[in-house]
Length: 219
Image (cartoon, rainbow, N blue to C red):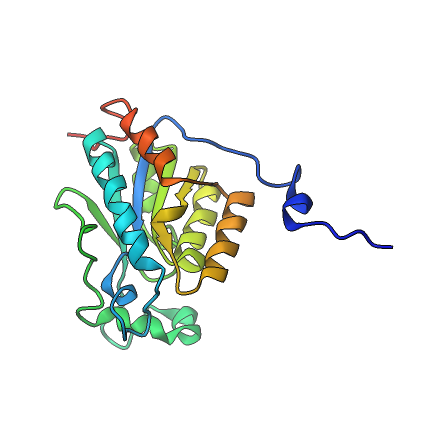
């Protein structure tokens, strides 16, 4: 007779080790643009607006602590999206990100003039961009991921983040998706294999206790 065990029991002791916060963090805000928050948009995702609101406090704490913040957005070549490759063949809905106001950053989480905005063409913030070298040059060892969507660009960035040697931290209230099922499933998977999914308050406490020059932008 086969004994039924829960998913948590099945993973316990195999996956789910904690990596914790490192010494020099950066916050990466992934694709918080209006395409995900305007009702009627092809990419509208009901879970993103709460994530935007929850991320405002995290960004304020990071800026107060002098922690480096980077933002990403998706940009393709205007000549037929020729740099979109196979991903756009699979997910042509991404083309709407080229249209205003869908391509505008959400209110409250806009980049400051002093913060880097990385333009990417694929899901991961690392793939085909300067992100890894920028973080490495700054001595960053921990990346805190905010943004959307959980099952897409957050997960892809978390996987690439750990593969590039960074501690990956995801505050669960600060990421969102279009449906709660893939949102929860991907948070579970990230927490099991690629990083630590934590509470927003854990991140705020860490940032508020940060040394003033921890992750700071070089002058």
